[in-house]
Each structure stands twice: as structure tokens, then as C-alpha cells.
Amino acid sequence: MPVEWQPVRQVRTHELVLQSIEEQVFAGKLRAGDRLPPERELAPVFGVSRSALREALRVLETIGVLVAQPGRGPDSGARIVRNPDDALGRLLRLHFALGSYSLHDVMEARVALERASFAAAAAHASGADLDAAGEIVQRMSREGIEPEEFNELDTEFHVKVASSSGNALTSTLTAAVRESVRPLILRALEDVDDWPAAQAHLNRQHTEMLRLVRAGRGAEAADLAEQHIRGFHGTLVDEDRPGAAE
Image (tube, rainbow, N blue to C red; front, side):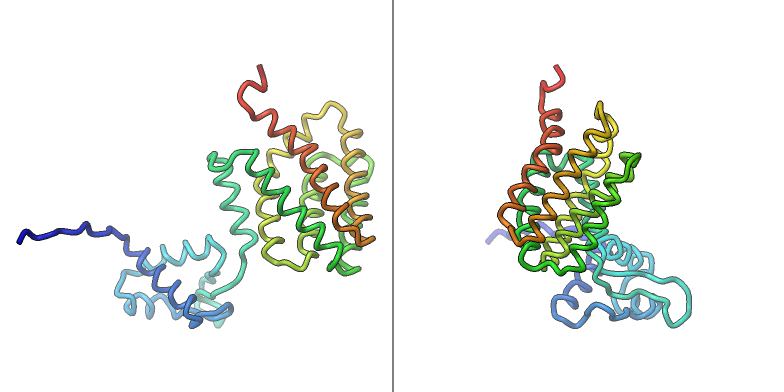
């Protein structure tokens, strides 16, 4: 009977370390706040070199589930954390820049997420959250504000509404998607023919969206949020289509 050979999966050493740590997290044996043993103790346990262990830890730090503090004090070493916002935003920005997602895909994701955010915020947002969102709108309304600061505050406003919705995952995804297109939106703001007029128009929409949320009119707030996104973000999608500049 002929021997049936099976292909062997090639795995780099640090991937095996990652898999082992992930299994401990999935099993509930590693939780946020837990510290990993020092490298000099952990590497022999895994049976790997300290360089392979460090590579695995760097991957975990990049995806926002671990923070490494160098040194020898009580706070040194690697600790499991929950920090998905910055990590997801960074990864999504890179994939967007590499062309993994089209502008149209990003816009449709924004529409779906922010419709849900504004509708839920109308039902669940606290007065303090809405006051904070209102302060952001006031700062965006200042005369003479430059597009760069406006864009930062615009992102902050949409993320604040999402975070007030009561859904942490929606908030994180909204922040990641909005952050991924922030540089592109900034360039578009800088290129508008009449920046003061564009600023005033966008702020009227921000003010009205917030008013509808305060009034508990979630469906209307969601509709206006979609109109707001498609109105400006939509122009970027149109410009990105083949032949748009011809």
C-alpha cells in the first residue's frame, strides 16, 4: 500500500507562542490586568528563544491586547490590556491606504455604524455625554478655525456620539472607520473653494443632529447622519470612481 504523504504546515516560532497565549486568553486563564512572567522565565517555558518571544509580544502589543513596560521595577514586564480603539484604527488606516477597502465600502460602513449610533444615542445617551458633544460643536463653530483642527473635532464629535450609544463595539468600530479616512477628509476640506461656507454648512448639520438626539428623535437623527455622511464623504467616493476626473 503506497504511503500517503500530507503537507506539513510551516509555522514560524513566534506564531506558536502567539497561539499558546491566545489559547490561555480564550480559556479565561489570562485576563485584562494580568501580568506575564518575565522573558527569562517565559521563554524556557515555551521552549523558544527570547527573540522569538519578543516578536510574539510585539504583535500582541500592536493589536492592542498587551502593553510592555521595560525595566526591573514592580510595573515592568508585559501586561494584558484591553485597548482596541487605537489598534483597530491603526490597522484599518493601513489597509485602507493599501487599497484593501474602497472609499465606497468605507462610506457604506460609516453610514451603517453611525445610523445605529445616532439612533441608539437618542435613547441611551446621558446628559453629560450630550453636553460634551455640544461643546465639541461649539469649538467647531469658532470663526477662523482651520480645516485641520475642524477635522480633528469632527472625528471627536462622531466618536463621542457613538460612545454615548451604550454599545462599546459600535463605538470602537465607528472610531476606527472614521479615523481611517481622517487624512483623506482633511485634504478634501483643505481643497474646498469656500471654507467658511463649508464649515457653516457642516456645523448646521452637526447642531441639528445633536438637537434631534437630545429630543429623543433617533430615526430622524439617523437619517440626517446618513445625509451628512453621504453629502461630503459621498463626494470623495464620486471623485475616486474611474473616469471621474476626465
